[in-house]
Image (cartoon, rainbow, N blue to C red):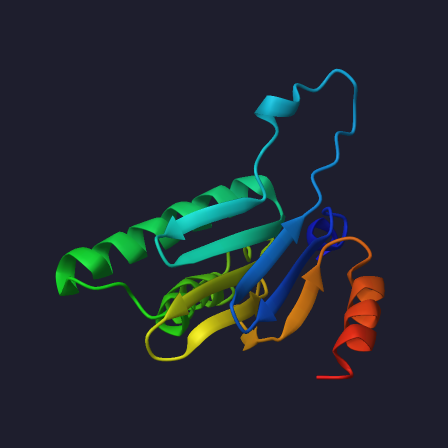
Length: 158
């Protein structure tokens, strides 16, 4: 999607002691108020966070759904939702928007990072179609291919 490829660069790296998400938030005009620019990094629950690239309005809808899924699970079961189960839920929603006429897919990709008791620290990438995959390091947004090449060089020793 053009909106994702034109979004500012976001990089995620999985480490033994955590997950690092870094997002560039450029100011495109001197007239913009830096304090009122949309965020790129979001805390969804105490153990899961994400970064977005793509259409801000679509991201806001999905961020709210992510928070709702996490809160419902915590309320219903008294424990945090596993990272992968959380991603499956949001990807099922994203995928459902590709099935019917009159609906367009969400124009947003996510990098999800977090920790759970089952798998420890995790980093996932989701795309507008609802596909997701686990990564050691990845990038989304503008110049993501160049960033991926650099990450491959850094991680070839691991």
